[in-house]
Image (cartoon, rainbow, N blue to C red; front, top):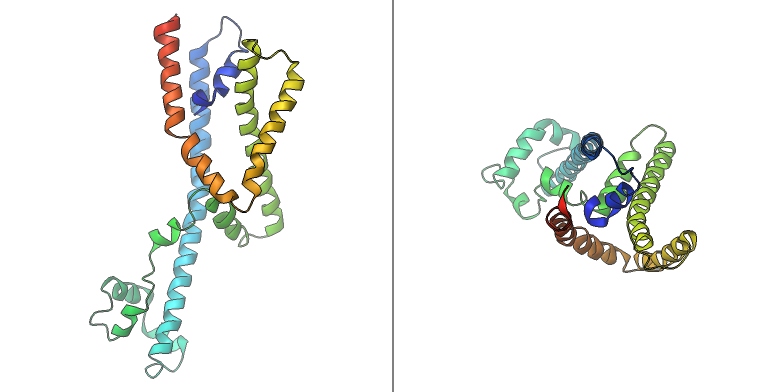
Length: 239
């Protein structure tokens, strides 16, 4: 993605003429791998915690429904939970309540499932603004963690913006297609980007985010990077 957006190429253009690009590539790949693994630990720990919490809440809701339907069998919810364990109830759900004595639950059960619960909010903006924010509420001193989390999102957005804009600004300046001072041109470009970004804060903003996310950072970038590599190696010459 860095090659496709042009950020790596733009930053690489500031290197000395005689530069050990192979060493830079190793260091950059290692740093990327390390940060990705660190992020994966954080994300999947939170997802696992929220998945377990959601699954437990779903089972509790199922127990309440079962208590309402079979109120004559159990005097209280506590008695029901002592009689039917979590594993027993999961087994009944897996068998569609056949032969369990609670066949009426087959039509009203939510059939709680870890994968389904996690998939409902573990994608795109739902991951950052729903799952993580709910998880932060379970931490000690939630306001502190909230501040740190959203500052991280802000820094992440700014960092991505710097790299992407640098790819555009450096390319146009070096090719001398724009006859403006760099600060002026940067201000104009940021202003245009801000106007386009206003789409994302409208009532249909969520759909615009999904549209941009689906069609800008996938196959189009892959094709751009592929042809860049062909041009550099086979047209310009790798030496």
